Length: 157
Image (cartoon, rainbow, N blue to C red; front, side, top):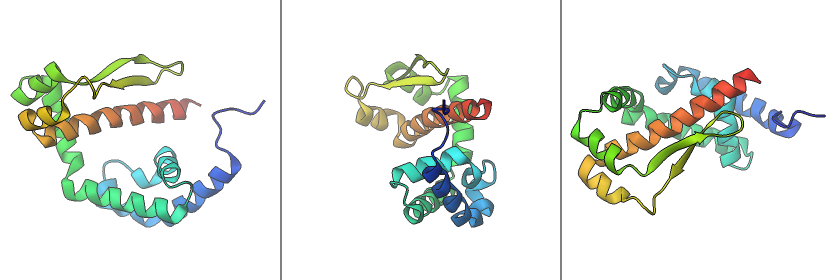
């Protein structure tokens, strides 16, 4: 029986083409701490987002890396994680009290499962009170936690 988690041949071919197309991004400032342009799961997500169109996926990845660089996401996220763990700032306390993102457990593969209860939350109110950047960093922190867990599971298979 074929492994249901294996990458199909056509998707693998597109992945190889995308990797070749974005190899020049290996030296991008946004790849300094995390090699986004060399990670198969990252490239597969961008391919999926653009229906396996390699050129469009490469453009999307380039735009995303440039946004990470100009926004200073890696530095801000590092500081935000420390602030979140400490839990003393008013914006973290506000987000923890009224957060609409909840980790509800793990799926059958051991990956974290989050519920985003946007209908029960007030993202605009949270953004007004805690700040848009704090809300954005909270969302990115959640997504990157999920991606890190996916990557770890991928390494085990």
